[in-house]
Image 1: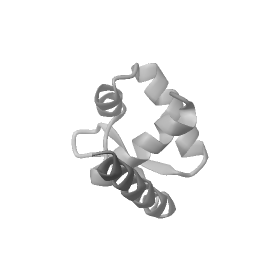
Image 2 (image 1 turned 45 degrees about the horizontal axis):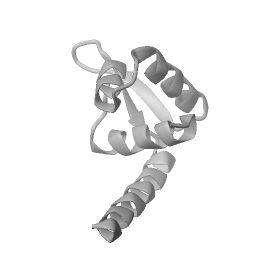
Image 3 (image 1 turned 30 degrees about the vertical axis):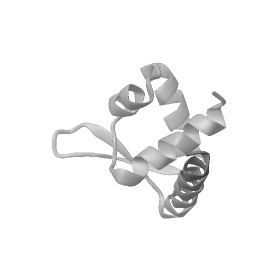
Length: 85
C-alpha cells in the first residue's frame, strides 16, 4: 500500500481517539519504524499534532483541517463499502 493511502488510513483511525505510535502500528499491522516514518511526515505536513498524556506517553491527534478531510474520507469509504454489499 502506498504511503499516501497509509497516511489517509491513519487519519481515519485518529478520528475516534488519539493514539500512540505503538497503537497505530498494531492497529494497522505495520512495523513501528514504518508508523514512525508516516507520523513524522504527517507531522511535518501539519496534518497531526502530538502531546503527552497523563502517563507521559506521546499520542497523536489530527489538526482541525485534517479532521474535516478525514471525515470526508471515512464517509466515502463507508459509501463505497455499502455499494459493494
